Amino acid sequence: NLMGARLAGSHVDTQEPKINPLVSISDEPETLYKRLSLLVKGHDKAVLDSYEYFAVLAAKELGISVEKVDKPPKTIERFTLLKSVHIYKKHRVQYEMRTHYLCLELKYLTGSTAAVYLEYVQRNLPEGVAMEVKKTKIERIPEHIKKPVWDTLPQVEEAEVKS
Amino acid sequence: TPLSPQARAARVRVGKGDKPVTYEQAHPPHYIAHRKGWLSLHTGNLHGEAGAAERAVEDSFLRRFMYGTFPGLLADEVVLKRRGNLLVVCALLSRALPPSKIYFLVGYTETLLSHFYKCPVRLELQTVPARVVYKYL
Image 1 (tube, helix red, strand yellow):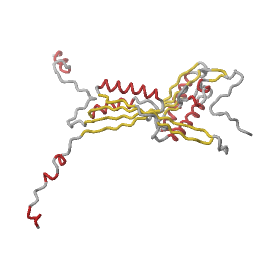
Image 2 (cartoon, each protein chain N blue to C red):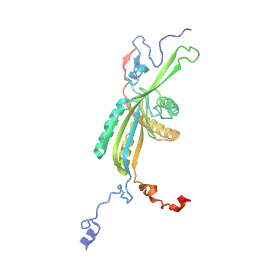
Image 3 (tube, rainbow over the protein chains, first blue to last red):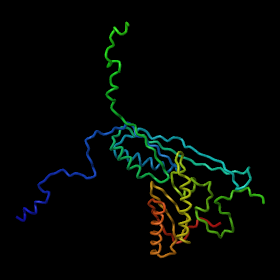
Image 4 (tube, rainbow over the protein chains, first blue to last red):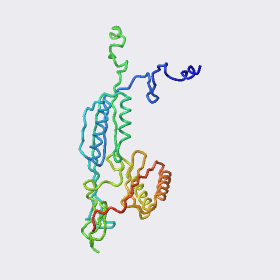
C-alpha cells in the first residue's frame, strides 16, 4: 500500500512529453521575411568592428544566412564657432562629429527567428551605438489581384456598342 | 590685453615638473578617438539622432553630483554609459574612506539618481591606492 502511494506521484510510468514553459506553439502561420537589414551607427570604428564580429557569429550559430556585410562611408558633421565670448571674429574653433556605419543584411528569416535574433543582438548593443532595423516581409498575393480585371468582367453585349 | 595665439582648452600647461597629471588630463582634446576615449557614451550625437542637449545637461549634473558626494575621493573623471534606459556611472575612487561608508554612499547615489531621472542608475566603482600618474608637468 505504501509502495503504491509512493509511486502515485512519481513520473516513472507516465511518459508525457516535457513542455518547456518558455516555448509557445501557435497555429497561425509564421510571417516570412525576405530580408532583415540592420544599420548600426557609432562614433568609434573599433566598437563597430567588434559588434560586427559578434552579430555575424550570432547569426551563424542560429543558422541565419548573412547576405552581405557592408561598411558605408562615414559622415562628418562639422561646424565652426567663434573662439571668444566677445568680439575676435577672425579667431574661430572648429568641431566635428564622425558617424561610422555598419550595414548587416540577413536573408530569408521566419518571424520567430527574427524576433529571437533581434532581441539577442539588441540586448547586447554597446553604449554609444544606435541601430535601425528594416524588415522586408513576404506576403501572399491577394486573391483579387491574381487574375487580370478584364477577364473577370461580364461580356459587354454588342447591341449597346451599335447604339 | 592681447590674446595668446595658442589654444587653452583642456590643456595642462607645462610647469616645473612637480605637478602630477593623469593620462586623461595630459592629452589635449585633439587626441580624442586617437589616444583618448570618450567620457560619456550616448547616441545623442550620432547623425540622425536626437537628444544631445538633454544628455549634455544630465552629464554635467551627474559629474557635479559625483564630485560632491565623494569629496576628494575621485581619482579620475567619471565615465557615463547609457544602455537603453539604464545609466551606468563608472568611477575610480581612492581608498581614503572605510568600505561601510562607501557602501552607504553608493546606495544613496543610486536611489536618489534613480528617483530623480526616473531610470535605473547603476554605480560601478573601482578603488585605486592612489591617483595613477601618467607624467609630471
